[in-house]
Amino acid sequence: MASPEHELDPVLDKDGVRLTVDDAIATVTLANPAKRNAQSPALWRALTEAGRLLPGSVRVVLLRAEGKSFSAGLDRQAFTPEGFDGEPSFIDLARGGDAELDATIAEYQEAFTWWRRNDIVSVAAVQGHAIGAGFQLALACDLRVVADDVQFAMRETSLGLVPDLTGTHPLVGLVGYARALEMCVTGRAVTAEESVQSGLANVAVPLDQLDATARDLAGALLAAPRDAVIETKALLRGAQGRSYEEQRTAERAAQARRLRDLAGTGD
Picture (cartoon, rainbow, N blue to C red):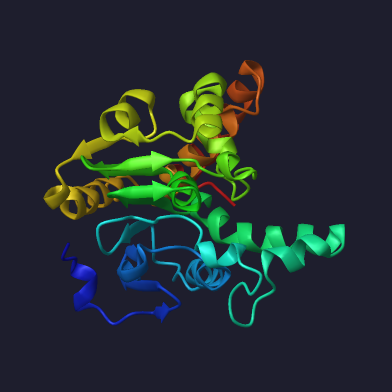
């Protein structure tokens, strides 16, 4: 799938991750199609770095992937005794102390957290397989546009593990506890049609329309004033953790800030 990002000089291009910036829109591309964009600690560090390198002008971040698969999940080399070159193997990590293991997983999770920042809106364009860590990376974004060949699957539990890359919270929020539990424990594939019906995806389109649809959505997201988008995203993200009365209070406070800003009376 061709993308306008190829016309831009990359801000970052390493370890299967490429970042380009076009004014208010940044594009993060998983760029290792030969390995179906399988994930590794090096890729996660590159994703974390991409988030840190975003200029302040960026309002929307598009996440896309080259090749037939969005991401086939964790590179199976992680489960070998050797692991990745220059990295502790998962077996070595398991034999270490609790604090070290927790800190390592927390570092990996950083690649999946910055997409939720209130000052940006993130959109994942997902085609083909989005398995395990790939599914969780798509879930890290605010919105998902999927191709009609998409197959989401959470395979960690089937491997004796759990989804630990921040995917469980958004998954339950999107589809509910019962459906999330069933998806995770069975590890089954979720199609484009079901992903839209269940709330996982905003829209499904033919594969050859995926990039264009995602970019059109990005453009539409730029229409509203930035500060109003930031306040609205913060309100909606916090809604699940607040009571009805607490949300009313948060709405009033946010609106007061917007009115004062528009009237030129803010601090």
